[in-house]
Amino acid sequence: MGRYMITTEGEEALVAATAETVLLLAGSASAKGLLWGFGFSLDGTSSAAEPVQWKLKRGNSASQGTSTAATEEKRDSDLPAALLTGFHSFTAEPTYTGQALMAGEIHPQGGVYEWRANTLEECFVLDDATNSFFGVELTAPAVVNAQGWMDFEP
Image (spheres, rainbow, N blue to C red):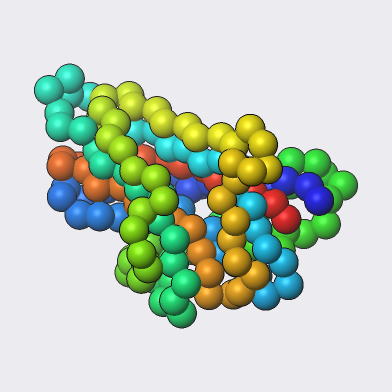
């Protein structure tokens, strides 16, 4: 199976002190998905700014929020269409279940974060269900813009 990418397709403006999903990868009833990596960057300018909190979260509810469909890009142009679906630009947040799979903080002044799995065992597995999803959620103490990506298969 091949790999695919989704991005925010532009800047996502974060509202101060508000948890916001910048990217979401939704499952498919026809295949399990593997999250091989994700990342984001911030465009803050103040060296005195407070850190942005980030979380990789899992959801398995019918509420995936209200958003714009992302264009799934093939890493190999010969691949068939992606079986998973990406979303960005949320106007209503998805409903997450359980605790964050990963979490941390990053400085908003030019901050860049990347996580990549090196082996299949390190990947996060997305259930083969249309209501299963992974989301990258950011909470910034002050207004800042973010851009992000996710690397996945199938």
